Image (cartoon, rainbow, N blue to C red):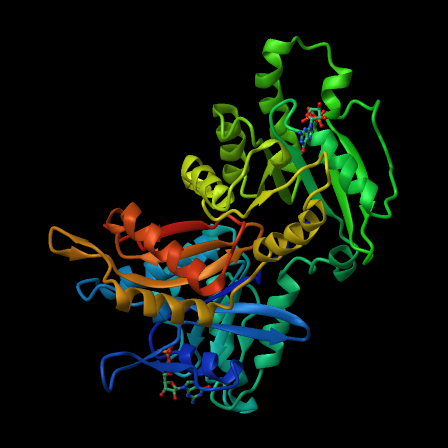
Length: 448
Ligand code: GDP
Ligand code: GDP
């Protein structure tokens, strides 16, 4: 039901050194993409590039450009490259050299790629002239289908290659689905925190169209709400269950947690209601944990604010207490309102829009790695037993919630504290208010 914002497809470029991978990269990226490192005079090639081709956005990864251990033998490096490509890429472009012809290493890598079941395109580079076309024939032996002849240097055949890549990808998500998309809001919390009252308030103050589908076997009542600006929201109100169910009062709290799960799984943004009179309870923490684990955007709403005696600092003190109780979720905005009087209810949808924008956000790979470079320069990655954590690169795999893959030399060296540091650095740089972030740490395995 939730249409996640699609990630750029990842295209891995694999091949022996000197077959022309960097040349290809630089040509399709349309500019020099090498960057100067902090160490004076040292340049290294970017190993990724976001490329647009006929309206599609692709992220190319040059697995050959990934720094490898100096004691790795050549073939091991090749296998490793292939393995990374298989694990991450949607399509693999296997580069060979039409001038040197087919080599044993090519055969080895081809075997690995063929067995992976991933879509692979066999590219024969350095076919600089039509007269050299017959050089591709020997590559049929690899069993990877028709070779695609290109000349990266002369920019010949690059369009055909990108087109072949696109043909192997699933059709892009239709724009229409994105445009006409209705944001799914789950209103969750313990019994009596004010879920129905808030839902009714939201509906009451907006020009709403109610499409009540209560009475079905659903666990929640869905109500469509059209805001004054035309934005549409579907409110999943789990409060409705109570009135239909025969559940006894004592079990109601437990039951409400279970029911919240289904609503949370269906939603984009979860509105977790807390009773201002009670503060954060154990059940609240449980529901918050589900929202976080399910990777949903969230707002914490402290309801019944009208019932609390206040002085100037009450709200700030209360906010700190809430976030302290929900430490794992301290990225979430906390709103104080009263469903009864209507106080600040009008800010709820605005906040939903804001956290939704963060939840669906995509950061270009280049920018991401620049920020990673800054972060690792500010605070050096940890080391243990003389081995230091090396982060080769990071790429955003998907949105909803933003999910990042970090390629590292040794997973075990990525301590919780450093991961937390990187997350905070990303949040400081890119905002991400109200959305969890997912960090996937992937080790480049040594073979043998
Ligand atoms: P990589 O190690 O696979 O990244 O290969 P490079 O892109 O660094 O290229 C290795 C060498 O091959 C360089 O000297 C390039 O100029 C050359 N080269 C790359 N593409 C072509 C091509 O299409 N035709 C010819 N003749 N040479 C090329
Ligand atoms: P639900 O079980 O979470 O749907 O909670 P309800 O919306 O049914 O509200 C439970 C009780 O809390 C009702 O008696 C409401 O009148 C009361 N209530 C809801 N919101 C507020 C509020 O903002 N302030 C106060 N003082 N009472 C509220």
